[in-house]
Amino acid sequence: NMKVLLFFGLVAIALADNTRFEGEKVFRVKPVLDEHVTLIKDLAQSIEVDFWTPESAEQVTAGINVDIRVPAMYLDLVYTMLQQSEMEHEVLIEDVQGAVDGQADTRPSPRAHSYTKYNTWSVIESWINSIASSSANLVSTQSIGRTYEGRTMTLLKLGKKTSSQKPAIFLDCGIHAREWISPAFCQWFVNEALTTYGSDAQMTSLLDQMDVFVLPLFNVDGYHYTHTSNRMWRKTRSRNSGSSCVGTDPNRNFDAGWCTVGASRNPCSETYCGASPESEIEVKNVANFIRQNKSVIKAYLTIHSYSQLLLFPYSYTYNLSAHHNELMSIAEGASSALRSLYGTRYTSGPGAATIYLAAGGSDDWSYDLGVKYSFTFELRDTGRYGFLLPESQIKPTCEETMLAVKYIAAHVQKNLY
Ligand SMILES: *[C@@H]1O[C@H](CO)[C@@H](O)[C@H](O)[C@H]1NC(C)=O
Ligand SMILES: *[C@@H]1O[C@H](CO)[C@@H](O)[C@H](O)[C@H]1NC(C)=O
Ligand SMILES: [Zn+2]
Image (cartoon, rainbow, N blue to C red):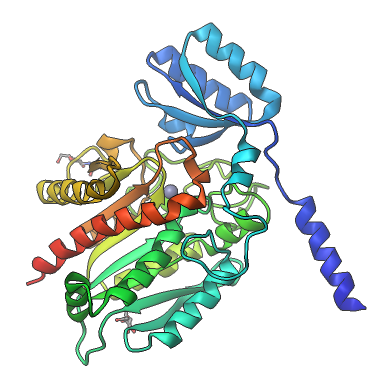
């Protein structure tokens, strides 16, 4: 039977490609001297370490915490280096594979869609279709193009249908594949919007007056890969010419100070900026949509994890944006709204000064295009689980984040005319 053979063939390939993290640890190291910084950069050159924050060795500077995942075979080396250099450090995750296994509340994961689970792409895709048909009065969908591997990028438009064009907010999730809490938030947002429309005064007024474009999953190929092959994948899945390393960092691929700072020209780097701005089809699709509809798009919100930050332009320069004071006060108000629910503390500010320089990001690009209210969220946590945030934290994370998003939306709405 052909089908059975094909099926077992695929399973064998999937298993062969399934990266495991046995014996690996995540360290937090605290470089305070220039020698410490040099040491970390040298280490990154000579062994395989996965930077969790900052996103690459290039962005390491004295005075910031550096979270790195270290393969089992290099643990002794890293311990020796830390001791000899007297660099302060702690182990954030003792057992990475254990944390990977511990994320899901139940194993095996159920196939049904849930707002409190990390759903696979195929589950998210059917969820999009069912939402669109069950809430047709408030939701419409459109494809903004296909991914590198041919998956459809579906955009949901939420809002009361009117004959005239409405001003809009654009929200995307899942630019980076391994930041699973991010697409979970977009799904939560859609459900919250649809179920509270008509009862919650603010949501009702928002969706009456504005549309919200939601891209529930930006980097579909990468996300799929994190479910099938390598939980720690970050980039797109495009092939690079002249290198066996796969993928580009989509959040270094936008045309905003492209590849000038905080990005790499090496295709093997996790912050590879790509062959040219918008070389990634996913980036081009989103940029095209925003460009074509920029007269209606008043705000751009993008959801990442982790670190608990609410950032706004700029990241590619230390220069302050023309709307710095207004953006800062919105970010602070949104952060305190978020904190009011469970006490979760966020830090807010422009990307470059708050964390580190990084060029080619989507928020800087949309801001320079003219979308004034442009914000990047880095959701929970601050490193206890990092990208491996357990499913039990999806609900509280999404609930508190809703408050911040609604705070920003209210400000945008108030300043429409
Ligand atoms: C976005 O812009 C394109 C091109 O102008 C247009 O066809 C499309 O209707 C717009 N989409 C929305 C949802 O307004
Ligand atoms: C920062 O501001 C200075 C002074 O206005 C300007 O010359 C420079 O080009 C700006 N840098 C960037 C990267 O925009
Ligand atoms: Zn990210």
